[in-house]
Amino acid sequence: MARQLWFLVLCLFGLCMLAALAQDATPPSEHHAHPAIGEFKEVNGATNPELIPDDEAYKMLFVTMSLATNAADAEKAIRPKRLTKAGLDASDSQKTAQIVDQFRARYDDMVKNYNDSALALTSRGEVPDYDTFQRQLLALVKETRQKLEATLSAEGASRFRSHVQGEKRFMRMAVPTGGPQ
Image 1 (cartoon, helix red, strand yellow):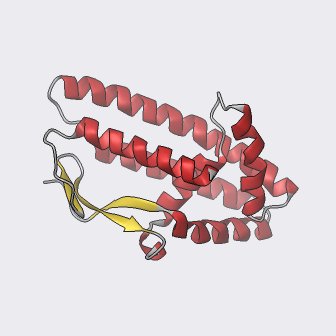
Image 2 (tube, rainbow, N blue to C red):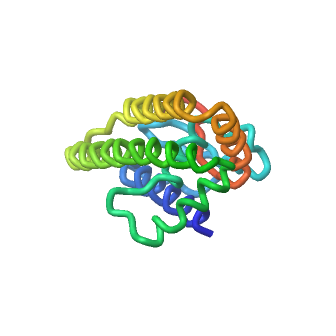
C-alpha cells in the first residue's frame, strides 16, 4: 500500500511537471508529445518489466526507501519493512538507509531547484532545460548505485539488485520514444 502511494505521488509529480511545462494541451492517447522532451509512451512493468530502465527503477526505489528530512513518524515506521523486503541484513539495511537518505536530500534539492527555475522560465515564455535536469538526476542515481555496490556486502548488493529487478513489475512510467519536436 505504501509503495503504491509513493508510486502515485511520483506519478503525480511527474505529471504536474509535464503539465507545467506544456504549452499546448494534448489530448489523452497512448503516445504524447511535449515540446521540451518529445514523444513518450506509458510502459507497464507488470506486462513488460524489461522496458523499465534500470536507472529509473533504482531512482523510484531510492525515493521510496529514503526518508525526506521532514519525514512523518509513519514513514519512519515503515522504512524497516521496505529494507527487509529487499532481503538486506541489519548491517546492509543500515548502510542502505544512510545512502538512500543522502540521495534523497540531493534529489529533493535538485527537484526544487529545477521547479523554481522552470517556473521562472515558463513565466517568461521560455522552455526549461529538461534534458540537463534528467542527465543530472541520472548522474545522481548512478553515483548512488556505485556507492551502494561499494558499501554493501557482496550478498547485500546482489539481493538489492535482484530486488530492484523484481520491483519493476509494480512500476509504470512514461518513456521517451523520440527526440524533441
